[in-house]
Length: 123
Image 1 (cartoon, rainbow, N blue to C red):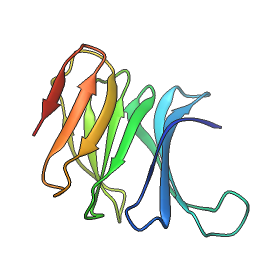
Image 2: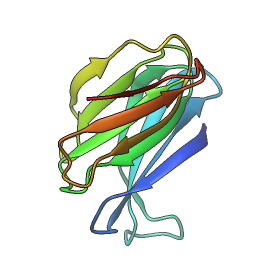
Image 3: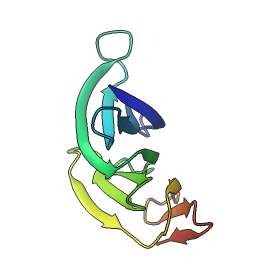
Image 4: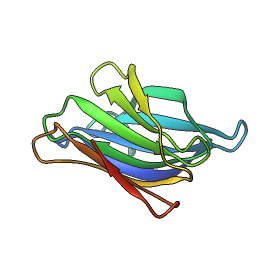
């Protein structure tokens, strides 16, 4: 079972990502759903089982629809994912505590993050 702590819609509204942790393994997971898929909760398209150490605390989809950003609670990292394939692109480190929020700029070229270490970063 995954305890969902954060969610983000794709820009076209057809996909929904949920981030949280698995209560069995204490690993951060991301689940992607087809919002209009079969069943009352949509259809699961993919699961990224080891997205972060600890909870996936924040998710954001880039406005151009190509990237998903996630923030972690125990690894203090922001990670970028290919929104189509679910493949990891890179991890961005530098915060000293849990990531609280990630957000893309309107042009999808920049990303900002906020942390429980009371800092904000952008790039």
